[in-house]
Image (cartoon, rainbow, N blue to C red):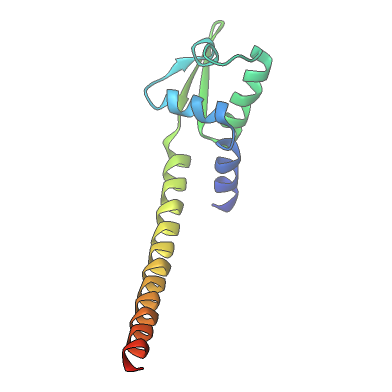
Length: 115
């Protein structure tokens, strides 16, 4: 699981690759369609697609001379689960920190009122 998450986050660390993932979320597209909005050479764009494919986020099928890409849900679901788990941990920590801050504030006000 850890390697899958590492590959996912490494793949989406680049804005071009994130844009491809966002585009594919609305449906399959050819490589030409995916590359069109990006001002980079096709070989460079293909390296981005390879990173996405190697991470498992994107799959492609070649029919004749046309390669069509689609998104794979499993890596996205795994990342979402990990992020939800992290959010739960940090929300709990922040809730405890807030409670401590309120206790300290109340104690400070109590000391101020006593003197």
